[in-house]
Amino acid sequence: MSTDADPDSTLLNEHREDVSRPIVRLFTEYGRDDLHWFVVGVLASTMARFLGLVPPIILGAAIDAIFNDSAAYTLPVIPNAWIPATETGQFWLSAALMGGTMALAAVMHFFRQSTLNLFSHRVKHEVRTSSYQAMQRLDMDFFNEMQTGQLMSILNNDTNRLELFLDNMTDSVIQLVVLVIGIGGVLLWINWQLALVTLFVIPLAALFTYWFMSIVEEMYADIRETVGDLNTRLENNLGGIEVIKSATTEEFEDERVRDASYEYFRRDWLALRMNFIYRPGLQILTSIAFVATFIVGGLWVISGPPGPFTGNLSIGNLVTFLLLTQQLVDPLAQMSEAVDRYEDAKASSSRIFALMSIPVSIRSAEGATDLGDVRGRVEYDDVDFSYGDEEPVLHDIDFEVEPGQTIGLVGPTGAGKTTILKLLLRLYDVDSGAVRVDGHDVREVTVESLRESIGYVSQDPFLFDGTVRENIVYGAFDATDEEVERATKRAEAHEFIERMPEGYDTRVGERGVMLSGGQRQRICIARTILNDPSILIFDEATSAVDTETEMLIQRSLDDLTEDRTTFIIAHRLSTVRKADEVLVVEDGRIVERGDHEALLEEDGLYANLWSVQAGEMDALDPEFIEQASERAAMGVRGED
Ligand SMILES: Nc1ncnc2c1ncn2[C@@H]1O[C@H](COP(=O)(O)OP(=O)(O)OP(=O)(O)O)[C@@H](O)[C@H]1O
Image 1 (tube, rainbow, N blue to C red):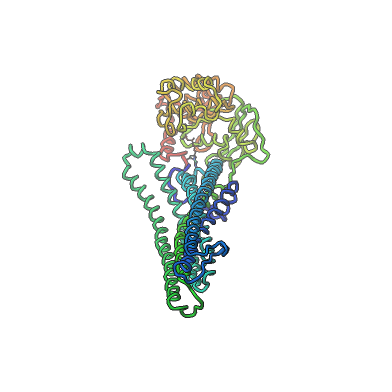
Image 2 (tube, rainbow, N blue to C red):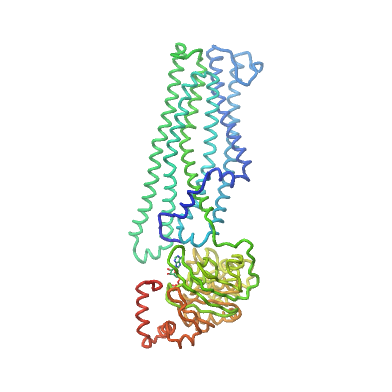
């Protein structure tokens, strides 16, 4: 995985552009199973909002009939026969109806909130687990390109944003739609002419919102990206805290974090500034509607219909109008938040769907069969390989290994040894040629059966946060205590584990930080032994243990490797001395091959490396010394 901040995660962006209607997909693909909760929530929310319209209507009727005595007491829906004849009766009916609808609205709000929250949390859970599943299956090329922080930001921040959106946005939209339709309907029914004065703001608010949305959409996508960059920087620094402290680069890192954080602040601020215009803008529009209704309605009540208006308007009607207009302010003002959340959620879900749509090229082919019992014959047939679009790293790799043989791979750093064996695990596919196991091209068998048959101890042993035991049984979860102990004894790990404060139950810390490099390696070797694979790969697996412990590990591994194909990558040549064949890799090619004795006789690169390690500096070929310093100067493979 890329550990340095590459601000432009092009791979994700390319796919993001192809994602269409992400919000619809959110509902159809992830909300489907819980849609009933959503429907209940929508109904409860709609009911609650409609019930909220009732008290102003009752109040208007009560003012005209009871307090002003200017009209008969009538209510929509309630039959006149049910209405008491006395003013006192009408008064108490009004109080009961207003109290009743408010209480019922509160119950509806309870259902609205609990069901919509349940729906949104479930969708969030589904989206998070699906995006993790999809991500885990992506090719290694993807992890090489993507920043860890970007990925964490998708799995965490983006899914959280969806929840926020589903929680609040649905409700805000319902509130807006119901209130606009409900209030609009009631106002038009009471007095359609005054209603036009009140409702003229609605299309203006819609236009204003459309304009706002078109501007902020890109801004939100930008913000999400900078959050990812900031996360990457923070994660890098926390992971490399030892390097920072020992190199005393705290100030340099302060500066880099400040830069990343400032970039986030800057883009966030740009979007916020738009909000500063949008929110007051909407507020002004709704206030204009309120004041216009008050002026026109007030004049109407005082001295009859003003200007082009006709007909009557009672005080009760005006009070209902003003109360309902006031109710319009809230949802319209909240619309900005809803739009914010919508844009946010759209950017987040398009990132999530983009991640899910990245094609996986390393997967089991259609109709691929399992490898079955592996004998361990391995064949590299004229293999060429390059990482992504970069320069080729391996050229014409061609060798065969018989079942049970032990093969050593040696050569300068960056020569391509690890890469050769990553092709056997099919972490990458060859550019040309083929890698075969027991005669089967690795691309034609299922990836699972291939990888299950291979045990890989990498040069960078990774332990999960958890106990020693949990790390050892990783992949062989049913192993018994006896089996675990047998494996750790073979890996020369049992004794040091026993000496730890809580033995096998000692926690190893994040990435195994509480253990030494050599202890981590031995635990990883034990894990591999326990998984009992047919083919073993030790990539610098004992580089961090002292020579004495390495000798002990090798001795106890001898019977393990005796009848299984084993690859050992080592810089310490004594590690591969007993190998059936040693492949000497230089600059992506196999330049020498043979057993230890034969290679010494050849007097080439291997013989020179051996002399270096044996301390026989005088025996070194001057040409070798010259080439070695060229390689060291270039840092890697000795490319020209
Ligand atoms: N994921 C990657 N993306 C791009 N290039 C890579 C990647 N991994 C390795 N390389 C490059 O491929 C070349 C071979 O690397 P590889 O790790 O196979 O060498 P190696 O012989 O195992 O080195 P070492 O002995 O230091 O472990 C190097 O030049 C390295 O920079």
